[in-house]
Image (cartoon, rainbow, N blue to C red):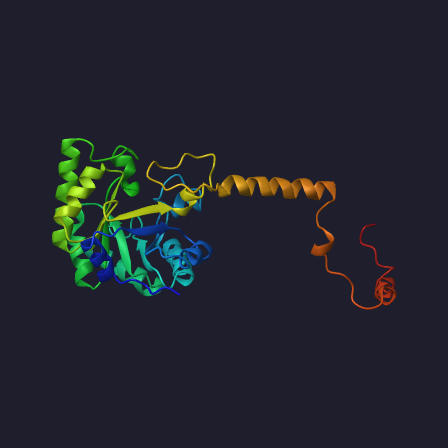
Length: 285
């Protein structure tokens, strides 16, 4: 059984130039598998909105849903450093709201850290949460909660103005007490530069993360993001093939097989006499 890493150990890995990994999942079953690997961190994100509930975006996800899923992931991965998402509407209103919901997420689920989106405008929220003893991670670049306002899911930081804003936001968050920053869908030169300037982990420079549903191609009819690590196994296609086999074999009468049946114990004639006791009952008429 592996030992759960602390936040300080993740920082030490950065200092030593060692990358760590983050597996993104939303339930007990996948989390339990991750917990049996050396993968250092696990993330329960609001992307569950699209990948579990079929929403068109992450925004409909509620705190109650996030708490239930984080609880399941924590039970499945007790030996892996875990962080969970602050969902849309759980922190934007005020630093006080952010503290209240951040504490709730930590207390009710056992996550080691929480993550929120946004830059300079949320520095006061980060400071208040940090002062309350919460380990807070930031999220810049492609930010799904505000995608509709920020050119959708297109890569960010590819031009000078966009790169300058991301750097400014990173520095503001760090000065407010942020403990790590996810830079999603930005050029590697930008993430490496930020990592060279800040002593905290910068995800995609010091870390690499992938949604397990993307890694294992659970939705073969959807194109996964460019940054996703892809397994050689397509669980989605394998599952579809297996479901088709099950349907076909059942229709053909080859399923279930003998080894799948529960056979009668004792004398079969005595068993059949039980049926005789109910011979006069017929609800099919």
